[in-house]
Amino acid sequence: IKFSGLSYADALKLSKQTGKLIFIDCYTVWCGPCKYLSNTTFKDPLVAEFFNSNFINLKVEMEKDADGPELGRLFKVRGYPTMLFLNEKGELIQQVYGYADAKQLMNVATTVIK
Image 1 (tube, helix red, strand yellow):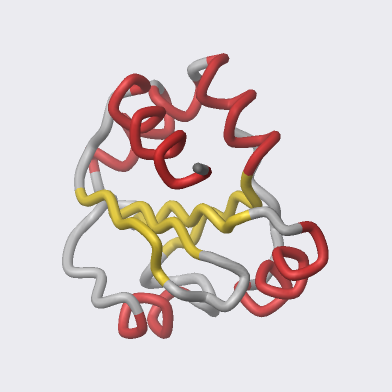
Image 2 (tube, one colour):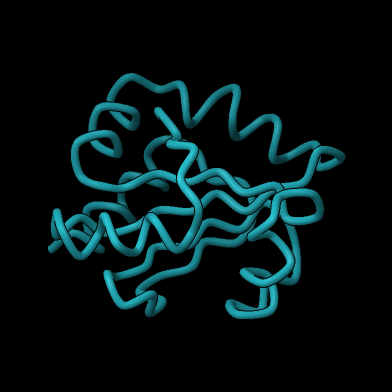
């Protein structure tokens, strides 16, 4: 998956302009399952193609990035990895907690798009 360097506010603006939903990978540098997710699921060609075509993709380090702590509070992120699917208003559509393989993540993503 190609993750943009956009801020959360800019992602919301782009979502309103394009009609694409927002996908956020909430992670920390010390999280083992987060690294595994990045090295496996996010690199799966089918996952990458689908997410790059259908979502605005953000990767937020929850302890260090500017938007991290606020997003953590806003969406009650309690552990890592947590993946969020949001609409253009910033409303939570779906949340995935913990590691998900390519098939599991695609099942969620295709349901969210419909």
